[in-house]
Amino acid sequence: MEKTNSKKPTTAKQIKIKLIRSAICTTPKQRKTLRALGLTKINQVKVMPDNDAMRGMIKVVSHLVQVEQ
Image 1 (cartoon, helix red, strand yellow):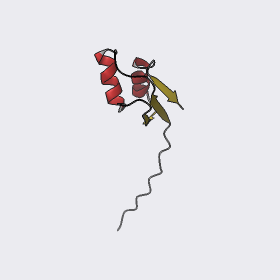
Image 2 (cartoon, rainbow, N blue to C red; image 1 turned 45 degrees about the vertical axis):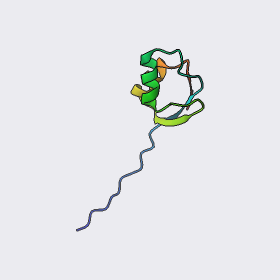
Image 3 (cartoon, one colour; image 1 turned 90 degrees about the vertical axis):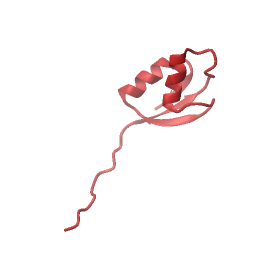
Image 4 (cartoon, rainbow, N blue to C red; image 1 turned 120 degrees about the horizontal axis):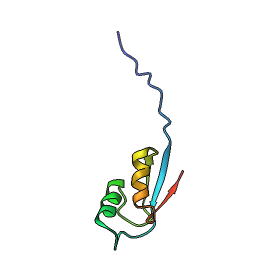
């Protein structure tokens, strides 16, 4: 008996996060948050899942990033 992998693809909501301002002159907490989001260079874009944890991280650095749905 062979098992078939019949999982449905998940269509979870995702958001694009783009770093638009430099991390210079930010607090250490904000720099760590940017690093956790995977944003290290200006104009870098990351696609992340749209969940409460990501929304909280974006709120910390909202003045440095641009969010697209």
